[in-house]
Length: 290
Picture 1 (tube, rainbow, N blue to C red):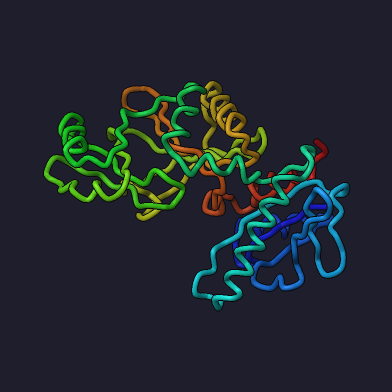
Picture 2 (cartoon, rainbow, N blue to C red):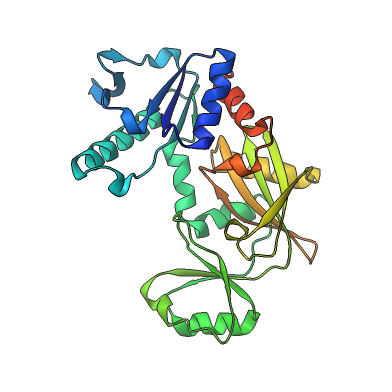
């Protein structure tokens, strides 16, 4: 049995569901938009997932894939609170299921993306280069860092999505006093996105004129990474306890491979081919014997 939780309109989740359905693999899809009969309740010293009057038997579980959303103003306040409690309960339940169950990803592992500086220490440990970095709330320190390196990238330090942009010596950096901000030396080179599913890799070269390709036009080309780089990607996912990771790399003009971060819940569909290789790999991984 595979448990999926999120929105039916969410392509990464829905594509995995379709693969499982086409194969006839037993699965339970908990649609966040219509899950009024779903509850997580304490039973003795454990948590139980119930759908109506029935408990989902943990002993029959193979995998769990969680992709819930904060629905915000799409629901009323009472429903928003109920769904928030349910999502929290499901994360706690998934965290506590036996180790043989493959959870994409266990909530404790997903927390690593909430601190990019912390992830950076693991990234360096597995052998990737990390650009010179400053984390600060001091505008003068930020200005000195920018003056030293000329072109500097600024972005969020948390898992909250931000638009990556370049700042230079003429930019006003006064606002950093209100929020810890991460600055990194700009690295010219070629961008890559690598999706790791278990031990399988799906790598793409990204071509874009935008600093942040997600917010500009881009094209993708499937590629094979050099073997040492591929092994570093696997090692990074393993070090972060991730069954699924979206790793951002750049092959710098200085000949070094740099890594920015490992996304712990990547929306991979832009990189999935017509045969849905990534969704299929995820379905394989969730269904496989440990």
